Length: 78
Image 1 (cartoon, one colour):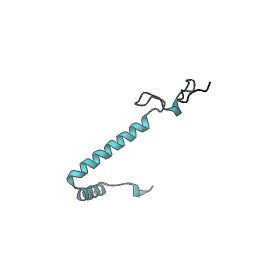
Image 2 (cartoon, helix red, strand yellow):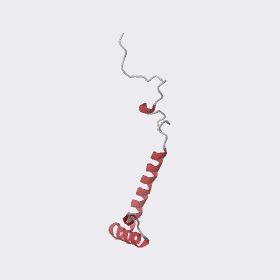
Image 3 (tube, helix red, strand yellow):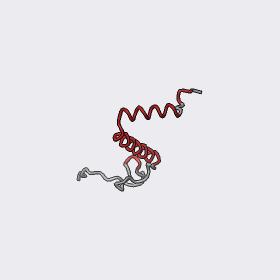
Image 4 (spheres, rainbow, N blue to C red):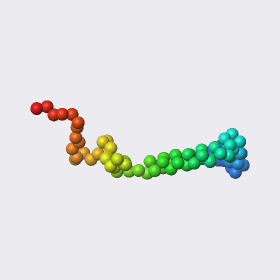
């Protein structure tokens, strides 16, 4: 088993202290809040069903059912 992947309490405190020194007490909470929002959006994106309509109410063309006719914007020739 690779022991380089495991981070202990001491290492976490050291990394947190360095981050606090580098970015300051005001900027660090803003950065962590942005990171949390990004992770939340990523998780919801992974759990979304690609066959459900998007926010606009329309299904993406690549996931649209095949039995529905798709309209085109080009005029028909007589």
